[in-house]
Amino acid sequence: MHFFEDIRIGETHEIGRHTFTADGIKRFAARYDPQPFHLDEAAAARSHFGALCASGWHTAAVCMRMLVARKDRVVAELAARGEKVATWGPSPGFRELKWLKPVYAGDTITYATEPVEKRESKSRPGWGLLFSRNTGTNQRGELVYSFIGSAFVERRPG
Amino acid sequence: MPAAPRPAIDEVNRGVYGTLFPPRQGLPVPQFYFEDFAPGSVAQYGPRVVTREEIVAFAAEFDPQPMHLDEAAARASMLGGLSASGWHTCAILMRMCCDWFILDSASMGAPGVDEVKWLRPVRPGDALTLRRTVRDTRVSASRPEMGFVRFLYELINQRGEVAMTLTTPAMLSRRAPAAAAS
Image 1 (spheres, rainbow over the protein chains, first blue to last red):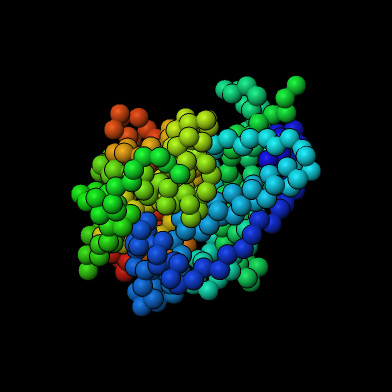
Image 2 (cartoon, rainbow over the protein chains, first blue to last red):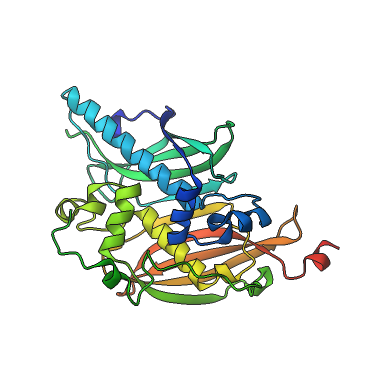
């Protein structure tokens, strides 16, 4: 990945899109969030959501998959140009996660990431801490998902 | 992939809340409403054992990074060994909440999560206990039939260490919506 010094704040990158199928929604929900409105069309129709919709954690997990896929693409591009690739370490957490609208079966969500803040790590010399706003937008252009993630990013040596 | 031999799935999930454990049905009538969560009250649930099988399966689908998939690569990383995706840990917490009380509550979902801290890695074999503290509660101004209950969740491993904290405002129906609306 890019080194800490090379990350530009405020630059938005689209990272991928995913269509949530009824089967996919139910499969995730059966494992991790078995509330009726994520598992069963009839029960969902009676709920305040009005129709089958994805667990918010499913929306979040797919976003993570897109972020990892983008990381792999960037690493491949840097390697192809013969540039040094920085290690991105683990994340200490996230904040301000918002499920703004339900993600219904059949919805296609486009995910994006935007670096919003970076600072040197006090606890880990050689590393910086990057904060990014990650979002999901549905096929009607409505923002459905947003959070501010964080990750340790290697600093350029020397 | 991890070098350790993998037990059969039936073996992994016997006696624990494994990922393949079928979802239970909630009670026909909710037992827990907004009013049942008193500010300051603390309760605990678990433990739930996290298996290598489910760590790798979740990571392969949603977070395919070496430290969640491969023992040798994980040892070389900042995490020092194979560990669950943080998003997997969030999903595990959600499932524990469902099995514990959400399926029996008048839950209306949650608008989001204020903050999550991934404090320590969650490893294969960890037995996680969930501690729930009611931080504060308020009736919705725009929808008096419901209220917000802000929970602090702490996932605690078998050594008593807090692996993750999560703060979220849950939406719950009030017990007497007619009276509340009048």
